[in-house]
Image 1: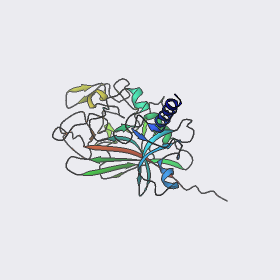
Image 2: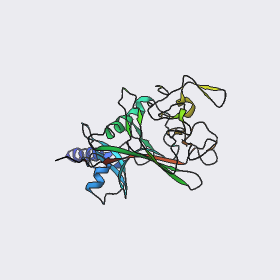
Image 3: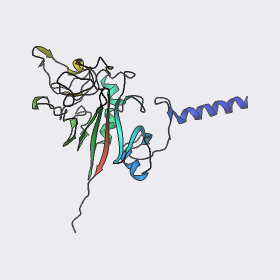
Image 4: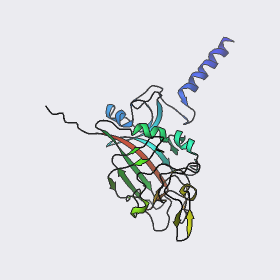
Length: 272
């Protein structure tokens, strides 16, 4: 009987050390406030799942860190296929879903605490895109942050740089998504009441048209949480992984996307 009790105890310990949601063993101790700090403290740190605890957060949580030459990036969105559906509710987008090492959405509440900022601290957001022809592109935005839950996690981005185009601000001013709250099929915060698209189609909720949750305006030219479409079926869909300033004019759903955050510390000069 004692052997059976010991065996059961070992099983419980193994379960505690294993991330059942993400399917891999990860340390249970906090390793940093975010991926940027982990990379700074451990320059040889490699990409993978880490436990972080941002300032002011009582419960640590796991994230996937992309450790690059320019620092550690906290991944909050990854799309590579159709295994994980992104047509989710507000509650699911707020809490997060998917598999950290594969397709996932980290959660609006977690991205909020990661980008709250503070004295001398801001966040850069990077969007990486892959097409079906072997091409890649990226977009970076300085001063990235989300509003509070009461503000529906409103999107705020600063200056753009990259070669994918500034799809968040869009091809023309009236579809600028900067400053809009996050929308899902069960919680609408877009700028349509309604929008007239494609000449004669009236749309009240962009999330129904584009699929997935996003910071829609009217409805906008960036939307990476729609339906994933395979090669040969990735052109012409209203839903999809769209970054219209990179691919177009016909709607083009990208093969893969990744969104991630890096902390930037500014030098504070104290006068004598």
